[in-house]
Image (cartoon, rainbow, N blue to C red; front, side, top):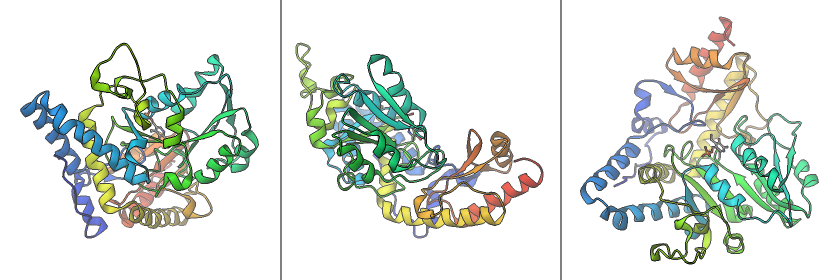
Length: 389
Ligand SMILES: Cc1ncc(COP(=O)(O)O)c(C=O)c1O
């Protein structure tokens, strides 16, 4: 069964939970959180249950673990358990949400060119079926000014879709202000919080968002295969998604093929059987985040990121960051002519970072130290001196 870790005595002690640090300096949580011993143990516990109980594992521990995952994620974002649906990916969650609207009455979906591509594709592919897609072109490479949304949203807008933290800049968007801008015209707001949940405190009720999606891969330390959809109670009650499966039925185990009745709450958006190994991994990852606490994690992120940015400036590397470090989450980007060569150069020195077109991404988490950041920057400066930039 998934065990919980004790909060680290010192942040550095938390590293013992993550074996990758015996081999490399891991600095890439925005792509994939490091594997912890407790997550590996949880997956082994799942395999043992499968072996020992067979199908009986469903009605005992497995369905229980799925419910525990749902309520654990709900706690993290200040939601109720019945406001959370579980999916194998964010894309699957988006598909279910997109299927819940009648675009004949309100055809407009407003988003920006700073979103993660899968979010944009979801609506771009529906233009043929009547969606009027408004893609805001942001003049700011880091974020999207609120005024652009305020100008674009009107009485024909069904949905506003926006990132809480931008994947190519780490900049934090004011989602409460976006919710107000959407609601002023009767539109809903869907927040892509994949790069936020875990490292940034979020209270969905306070922020007033209608939907929030996130996944286990990055700051929730649970690996691939689990994504979460928050749907506010009254919003879920008013919608009838059509891209659904048997987990969305009000009485799933009645196996009634004559009638489909939507379940209460966010579950009405769900599809089929979740990947239970990923549920176990996801729960163990969430436990780590919850034990440390998102507020403490955010304080640590601000400390790590401030030191990293200062060091990068001092070495003349020109990080692309907002004026205030408090507007930045744990992703620091630096424009590079040949990002792949830089990532490869650091890999030869056992430092794991990541790239996107035209830039590298450095992303510390609590298991990193300020000294890690100094080392990463020193190695980048050394590569630059050798013409690898
Ligand atoms: C902001 C953001 N949204 C969505 C995704 C991916 O979603 P999916 O689970 O569909 O692969 C990512 C993953 O890298 C992401 O960074």
